[in-house]
Image (cartoon, rainbow, N blue to C red; front, side, top):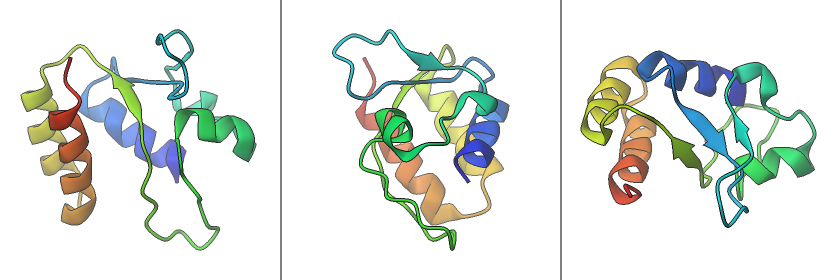
Length: 100
């Protein structure tokens, strides 16, 4: 699921990367869906507080996303490319509230 989500995010902005959420300075970054860790301990470095279940239910988590496109463009593109509107609203909240 996380690799599919990441692929979808890369279609919104191909420069998107997911940084290690626990780092004080963003140094370690995943740039490709294939780089998403498969073991849960490393996975949680990038998808903080996630507790994924094998049945594919909704999972809430914290992410540190790096991107080059404007946040407003990313919000619009996420909303237009995701079929689950509640899912996209949660992502939109993140993009809006965590601009630097």
